[in-house]
Image 1 (cartoon, helix red, strand yellow):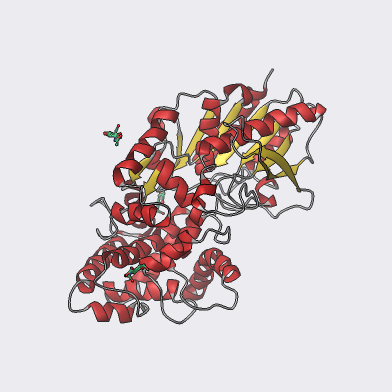
Image 2 (tube, rainbow, N blue to C red):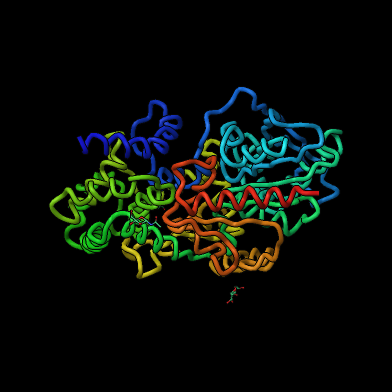
Length: 484
Ligand SMILES: *[C@@H]1O[C@H](CO)[C@@H](O)[C@H](O)[C@H]1NC(C)=O
Ligand SMILES: *[C@@H]1O[C@H](CO)[C@@H](O)[C@H](O)[C@H]1NC(C)=O
Ligand SMILES: *[C@@H]1O[C@H](CO)[C@@H](O)[C@H](O)[C@H]1NC(C)=O
């Protein structure tokens, strides 16, 4: 009975990523590069809470291709969604900011932000970020067409959105503005307040990374910690020992055995560092995918599974085959297979090429094996990620150029010291992103045991005491921000 329940739970979770690939891979049952497959799970935006409602409308607004070049006259259509069911003329705008994902009516159909809009007779908007979803400023993603992709451009789009609404909709002419965002779009809320303080009365940033950092070694530390705290020490040790053993095996006489156990395709080259790095990072991303959005018994379920095998390597290779061998056939863990997705200049693979471009130019945030305090070995150094910048875009992305660009982001927005008022920041204690954001000392609220963007739901009896307190604080702050 327990085993059956577990299968249902875990499949439902992994199903989110797989559903996407089924959509992409209609009829194709083999060899989806796995690195891509797991990363999708980490870029799907805050968890969807509510059933979409029929009365959420999709609309479009004309935006300038380059808001910073007065001579540039080309424009494009940005998508956004509207829910006006609680709106009374003069009420505030509640803008839920989209990040590197497709916006979806469920985002403004339910949850705490919708409850707040209802309390204040507000209108809800969900804005889409340029280059994601249906908001495509250029015909394709050739490198020269991506020069209009930068968070500064996306923030200018948001500013124009608010100004345009106030100018063209008389019922919004004097409306105050409240924003919310999760993950990258939470950073956008903070940075919007910094650049356009007069356009934003208050904002809520759930899980906002603020510090750009090339080698984001802390991420896997928190993934490991979550496996230990929510799973067990034995589970952590099993991962650590299993990975360590595989690292030795694949570089020695047992490399063929590893290839067979993990069902790697023939083109996987055990003498090629980039292939090996891609494989070990994909191992870690299985756990990252679980931890980043864990709820309930997700982590204990994975740990029970791992502990059900007789030894470490058997446990890990079974997990791998279960997770990646889903379609049957062989598992493509090659670097070149991954690269092909990032090289695709159509918008077909959605977030892959544009988001990675932003990381090379703006943030880094490469989740590497650079820390010793994590169980995933040492075989996915930052060199894997910076090599991908060069191979996917342009040889000019040297390590020092990437470092300079990332430094530029911190200088421009202030890194950990953005120096903004009226922004409420929340983080999950076991969210691997939280080391890049504010802690208690800087005034943020840290919710025990919670994961990434875990606090968008309505106040509910299943909330922990701290979760409930945080939502009540937010509710009180929004009242304050909207008081005349
Ligand atoms: C966090 O989860 C662990 C493991 O389930 C539990 O022992 C601990 O009490 C939880 N902490 C809080 C503050 O809820
Ligand atoms: C990856 O592709 C490049 C370019 O096609 C080729 O030169 C290289 O040998 C390939 N690497 C591997 C490990 O197959
Ligand atoms: C980037 O910033 C760090 C920390 O402020 C500094 O140590 C480093 O020299 C800078 N690197 C570059 C290339 O600007």
